[in-house]
Length: 476
Ligand SMILES: [Cu+2]
Image (tube, rainbow, N blue to C red; front, side, top):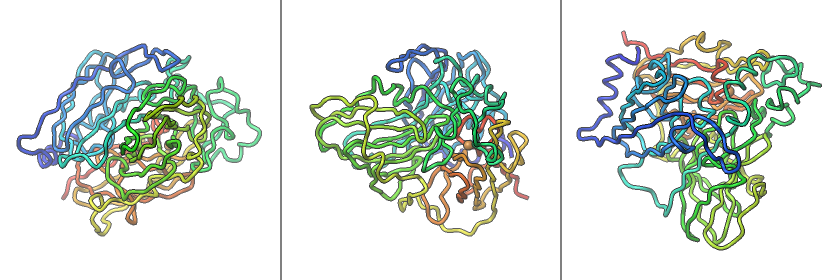
């Protein structure tokens, strides 16, 4: 059942309310020169800033975005986390043709659910340039109980510092000896490798291990950004002492999970991938690529660092929270909370309103995750996309997906067009970290017909094959 199927239009019609408000925007991806707060880089971005324009709508609205492709390459936009109509999902070769250089494409779809989302290309490794922006969908029933809101977008940055993401992917794929290993198949050859090869870009096992995630990434980045700034010249977030602030965290990184914390404070997690959770206080939060978390913080009086540490890597991004007098923190400030209690998405429970109804499972699919560094190849069920076997489902079914990580690298697995529930009463999510050798089961309601990508949100893994299709079949 393709993106042009009647069932896709019918699903959209069912979402569309009479008199729905139309929210319009125009986004122009193009080459830019951007100051990252220290380094100035030539890169690709959605306009003059990184992140790109903040889009905001209310659940039930129709979002219409004209995408004017001024890049030197074909592109597309994926509306990450939104359960939208399949033909607007932005996956070239699956839901649309790539938008050619110099042409425009109109994305238009109903936004069904409130929450924190983001948009980015689904073309090659373009996401690892400056091409990302946040989409906030407000509830028609009003905001929650907080005084202010901050959007905090995290990114790992290399573009314009001597190599492009495309060059890095090519280096990984050209491979060679002296390679570090993320894949099981390479385990025997790990000892004694020279990890200083490839111009220092590829991490060695020592440098790229996380006690929480195992293999923490394939790439060492020179910079980590918070709202487009390095820690050398960070953004300042201002509020008043005692205010309750909702922080909307988005990890737009391509190969880096971030551990976030606010110095001198605890955070109370309230949402995961847009959907409300049972509130949980924590010192720190681990955010995989493609994941979003909202947390409430009640602010003290003074100046505090908000730190996003590159998990298992060297470096951090920073924001300065200012509610009163005080000196700004140093770029390499150490925040005690980062070493405290760390929450992952798999630790959360859904709020009552986000619980998936109890139902028996109609269909099960296994997604075995594997890979090797040499050759650079990441697989689902031993296949690389587009040679993978599509996973079939039928509208109306309850489907259980089982992610079986058979590699020594973590994979944040993302499913398009649906928000799944972590099995056995876990939180609603669309992206979930699967740790090395871990199995994670998720359930989803097959209620959005079409052809949907399911892939690792490490963009290098996805490009090296770790992607498959959830393929709705016609009912007989
Ligand atoms: Cu992966």
